Length: 488
Image 1 (cartoon, rainbow, N blue to C red):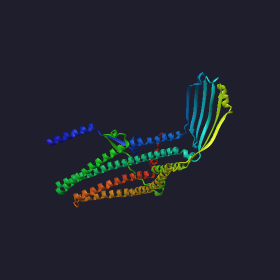
Image 2: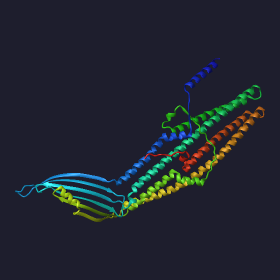
Image 3: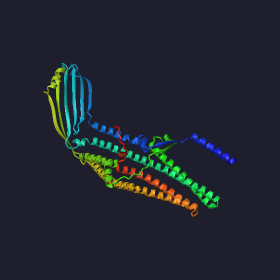
């Protein structure tokens, strides 16, 4: 009696605890999981910044063509002694200057300058204005000549941004694949747990029937012992399956949450169960798609193109410097500012010059070293690209093969589960007829449980293999109808 009261009290306490600690269930479609990952995953958020960094790198490289405006003003007061008996000469000079210098895409540098000089003093009968305005241009003819060479830094910066974009796309695809795979793994864990519970319930029903048959003398106590052992074994399997569910839940939470504590105390319930739909596979077409869309392959091609720009630039730097220089200006002079301005603007007092300078580094070892290192790096990147291409061909072939094999596996597993269920029913009928044993029924139940788990595993593996094929082809984003927008 006391034992019964204790059991009732424990049941009441458990019911009260369950009421106070009600489990919150969160239903999640796969699409929501993917969207949460894109919005919250910290690795994606960090990688998203890199294209913006490279955009500023392009802006910085373009700054090489920004003109520089300069100006200044200088005042000087000087006193010059004379022979004895003569007063010292004094002179006051005010000199403003203005300049504009920069570089052109051809490699030419220009410099516009203007300066005025206003002088007065005891040695001058009146103010004296002098000045000059002109422009000088230096155009390289070999080294650093041409649009391609002088835009190398900008083109390299653009390639760096393209690489950053492809790397970001690759990370997003990898995370979507991980989310989808984890989602289907959680589906498998939940369904497998249900299968284990069904197997446990079957074992308990068998135990109840065996105890009843022992009471009427149809079975021996050994059958009950075997049934009890079967129940205990299945209870352990249920416990382990439940733990697997929690582990897979945590894996999915980590992928879709900014902080795992967001879903703490909450049970995730996937609602998009794997659908076995036959798709048409074509290894050749999938390979062509991969070699045009896979971001890791496109990133490798951009990296090689970037290095080829460096090779082109360093090859140009092997040439000697031959610069064509030219200048043209106007001189002005007058005792009044008006006279000085008229004299300067009429162009009657020009000054001009033209020349060539040549600079040949003897040995030129630094430039030769830079060129050969750049060329060898390009050769190395080309080999890496070819190796990646072969890896992609193998990966696509394997991915297609897994899809086809898993589809056949689903069919075989379903048939195995059907036959295992028929075998169990037949064995149960034989037990009721007295021509079988509890051990054989337990064995048939275990075979059915194994077949059910294998069928669930096959369905999940088929869905996961489709996700893997999308990533191998580089079509993960398009298959999930996702368009990435990067902030410049």
